[in-house]
Image (cartoon, rainbow, N blue to C red; front, side, top):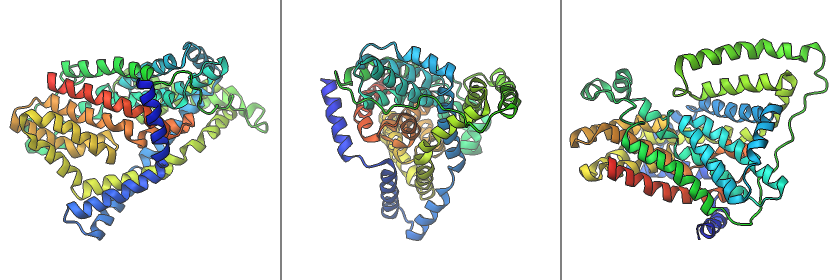
Amino acid sequence: MLARIGYRLERLFRAVTPDPFVLAIFLTAFVGAVALIWTDFDGVQVLDAWHGGLWRLLGFGMQMCLVLVTGHALAASPPVRRLLKSVADRPQSGPVACAWVAAVTVGLGLINWGLGLVGGALLARDVSASCRRRGVPAHGPALAAAGYAGMMTWHGGFSGSAPLKVTRTADLIELLGPELGAKLAVIPSTATLLGPLNLFVSGGLWILLPLMAWASAPRGEGDPLPLAGDGAQEDPSSKGWTDGVAVGALLFVPLGILVVRMFARDGVSRLDPNAVNLVMLFLGLALHGRPSRYLAAVRDAVPGCGGIILQFPLYAGIMGIMGGTGLAAAMAAWAAEGGEDGLLVGTFLSAGFVNLLVPSGGGQWAIQGPIALEAGLGLGVAPSSIVMAVAYGDQWTNMLQPFWALPLLGVTGARVGPMLGYTSLFLVAGGLWMGLGLILFG
């Protein structure tokens, strides 16, 4: 039954979902119109707020481009291609392939959101290619959705912005201000990430999402993802001693030293996009050996960055309107009016809506966190539960938000509309599960 529903939703989203760039244009116009109607800002002030945010994500956009190209180049290296092939050859049916991709992706997402995003995209692409080669019918849009599932669990994992931003007094004071920050003691990870609420929610999602991927995958349907290139070839003009492994070692050896020092100092829980890119740059250079082979692999991946380059400034502008006009704060304050019983669920739902317009975990926490925590203090709700309610709402609607899917779409060649037919099912099931957790353990 779920497979039929998923296929019908795929056809619906395929027909009605515009290109992600067009969707970003529509969202910009919608948020601007709401700001004009709902706030006291006039057209010029809203335009200024939009312009003030327009270029805020340039650095982050470059990080995402590097996530895409370094991940793609790493996957194109001969050792990783052999490893991915051996892993991708395991599933013997399309639905099992979807469940397998979702399980691995969710696990990687709980470790680090960047690993989940890149690993899920690469695994979905290679599983699709393996199934095509072996004559196993595997549905490409369902596989792409499974490879995106980690973005629905990341904020309850070890790279979650909100849980990590409340473990130190300095971060609390920076977020809440000296007065409110002094009222609230630091919230350790044992109360958020390792607390009963998150163990129930995130542990359950690790089981639920692969089951949903298996149950919703069409049976006997092909439609594989586009074939990836069969490995990049180096520029034939780049030969001789200037293109040897020894030259590459001048870069990847110091990079390797930095990687070892970074893990020795911070472990895996504090990985950020820069750290992920450092690791993938080091591994890609080392495994390709010759600089020309690595450069060719990067060139193969660069076209997939087009959507990121165009759309990240538009979403940054939306964030500028939401923050500059007070729209996001007003939505968070509305959620806090539900009283003690409704605060957690209201915060969760409002965070999900805000995430559609402000697709940044750290940015959303900075906007919604102070209001939600202050309301929780006044009503006697555990601050750790408030933190996780915001985190869950932020990750929940990623399943309808093409912003984070852009790197995956670039790697897999999938289209966003068909993929949303399956991620929308993840959204419904996962939202009910997270809401249940907040009610039982909040």
